[in-house]
Length: 278
Image (cartoon, rainbow, N blue to C red; front, side, top):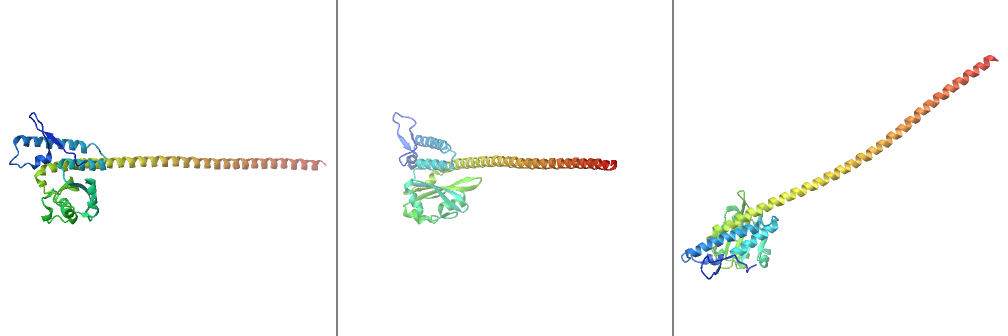
């Protein structure tokens, strides 16, 4: 990871010498040649183009976070960089590069909006830079000083005018990150866009998953309802059948009783006729 760099080559000449962005940025403005300045601008555009392609190559939120931080780390070559996402008044650490320095954050107290450079960036809604945090009252993390951090940049991640995260970039040697303000802001804007797209994708995927779950529940409910209707229909049919049998039996009984009554009346009349004859 730390050996990777975005680099370019001289635009003409038999020998092409590789330059990294950091090497270009280290050249004094008064000493840089027009040719070198052109090469620097071309390389910056190339870096941004490759960064945009890479950071947008995945719509999985955690992968986008990782790709963004890796791209920033390769392009800027700081000693430490990290990303916070915002949860109301808290800043939640999402990733740190290099990974070996993640232990630094295990001793850091909960980070809040309005505190230290990262928290102040959320309030200011703009990048904040410090060439020397040892002399900067805005930097209140003793842990950063103890880790040897000297220079720092905090870049807000924006959506609809609100800050939803912060990129932190740190150097253990003195660096004026503000000299690359435009480049860093472009990187932060492209990171914001990629993360917003990932969040929208995650939201859509969650909504689709929830819709499918609801459809499965609805289908299950429909099947259960059909079974209940079928079972109740069967019970009602059995009851109707029993009632029909009872009704048929009752009607047959009435008919039989009428037959018996008629036979009894007939016998009575026959008996009376015989008695009158004798």
